[in-house]
Length: 328
Ligand code: SF4
Ligand code: MG
Image (cartoon, rainbow, N blue to C red; front, side, top):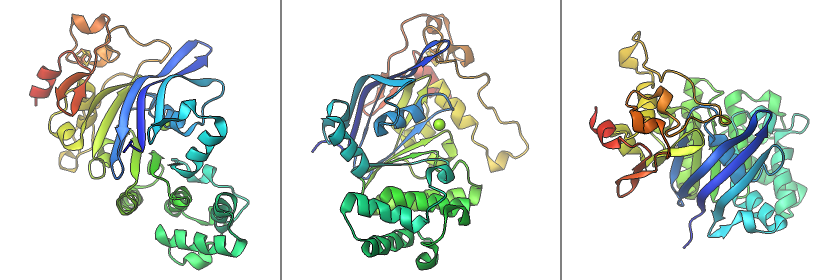
């Protein structure tokens, strides 16, 4: 059977005042049913743009998908007629965002907004759709769902609002859920609760979960696979355990070293020095070379390092991955 999601050689460009920005430059990954893949990277690396391309919410200026494939169950969404494409995206692939407040409509109750999905996409009556809305709030563990279904988004706390967002995303039983920094705006305890809820729902429903995040600490417990992105490319891909045990790309290594550690409280974090490049002005050779402590002459010249196979299901886009991996 074809996978719920296969992204192949995806290319996205933005027209900017400073020229064309290659926001996504040949990104590929698969997502199986019941699998969580984290897409990890600093802001501006192309991870959110990848998610938006999958959801079809940047097919207009200034951003364009300029190449590649986005396959849902083997069918390339980019080649489907618009109406069919929209149906797949509405019913089979759902997305939640960092900012639940701006994704919810402030003038309608939460129950109305949830119910509308069932009225619009399932042709349900008002009373049936309201009953389903209450069930969904229960599903995401919002206490007193029967009362709260009549409340407005601003009456919910940040964490509860994010639960409402998850309820909306799950309403039509998607096979793929994309979560773009779903906990970044929340405080740490609430973050953990929301991640636990997402992981639980994903298991129960055997969904594929694509988790977009800059926070390596968040992915350790929930992800199966990780794709690390830098300057619009995947620079390392591996099962989560391998990444933590022996990163093969210096950038991944740097991200790991920048996770705050409770046992090292007070010590300086060795975050990666410098900034990611402007996407209109990506360095020659390896895009990471100006920040890389392993860089050598070969890194400053084209070609861009290809994804070298590190193990049967691992790859890293570093000429010197062997040294990096061995250097613990
Ligand atoms: Fe560093 Fe060179 Fe590897 Fe790029 S290819 S990550 S610059 S060592
Ligand atoms: Mg983002």
